[in-house]
Length: 282
Image (cartoon, rainbow, N blue to C red):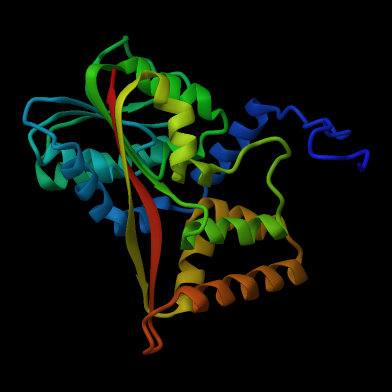
């Protein structure tokens, strides 16, 4: 048997990541550009998730890593008492402006998903669309979501899958700008196995179903321009590379967009798989 058989421990220790440093870099990334330009296009996912949760008027709803408020606004349209949170103040301002334009009454608060400033069992439903999945300390985020959700309440998530369009986009970026060692991929949140691991012990029921959101842009190049200019993680990835590296990353992304594009008329329609999850708190 080879000395490095499957049953033998790895001779290479897994590095312990500096999660505080990772979070600081993530905050800088999400604060750069203007995520709202991309986030606004995802509104339908918030609406669909609120329907999956079967929200009722008067329920207390917390939106974690809310961005510019897609799920928050969807819950407020259903007459829920909504608290929208994010650790990027500028995104909360965009959500507040959207709510004011629609005459919706909800609270906006700056908050870290890993240390929520709310009492235990404060909410009937806790939601996050493509937000909580990016926090570096996944077990801590899950524990916080469970803590603030009342027994019998629901946790609703929309998370990109590893094999879907956005999951593959982050994989492509990672080949050019490697992620910090020891930090698990956010796309694992788009697998039933990871959800069971994070929430199963305190859940009476978990429902998970694959869904698709279609990104629609004028062309593959247009999507690249929008993401490179406004989507923080992509903007920062390009900024970390020299001119040759930027060209290589751009070409790989355009190749990826072409493989997922089903438009056939020069525009871009790229379905991206995500996992829609509803967890009933034990």
